[in-house]
Amino acid sequence: MGRGRRKRDMCIGKVRLPGGEVSWLLYDAKWMAAIGGRESALLLLLCAADGLAKAKYPEHKYPEYGRRGGIGKRFMRYVSEMVFPKIIVCNSLQIQVMGAKDYVPFEKVLWQYLRGEMVHRGSRVAVGEGTQQVLVDWKEDSRLIIGRHGDERVAMVGGNWVLEVLFRLVESGVTGREPEILVGHGAKLGSRPGTGM
Image (cartoon, rainbow, N blue to C red; front, top):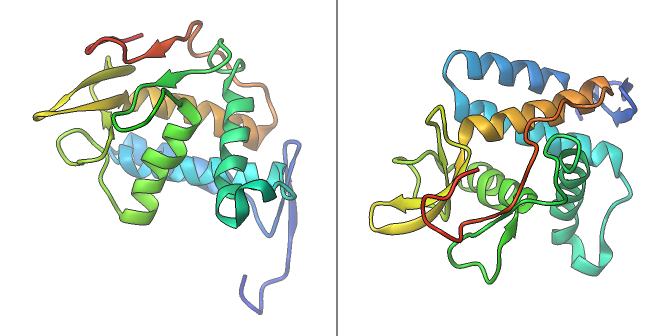
């Protein structure tokens, strides 16, 4: 915050955000998605979810993980509590990511493989533009699949599906209302190439 700004404490639903609020990120994400800027909308929603997580768990430092691990753990805790079973009716969603020792929880995919790549590396994460371990497939019917990108086997997440999950998560955090259910089932994904929900 700049020197001239007064510190505000705004209430959004049940979440107090010192210094501001995140509703503008939600509205800008809706606008970006409407004009075709889906990757920009995805990034705005991930940042909004991070802000909501910080507001809900301001003391959440996770000292056992050190300084660097706490922010990601806080984000993943918030997403997990908000998405499962409120938006997706299951206990968790695991995705097979190449190079990972085991299946990776959905919330970690959002934090590390999507948000981290976009924020810290400026990476494009869309299929055909990115080269990461997890890519976003913007086809209308895609949800979560394992597929191939060139000669590499990569995890691909359905972009429109992820956007819908994040829109519901952030809107719930901003308004304080319970989110609507999006998916009524979940499973470990990635045991077979081309597997979808």
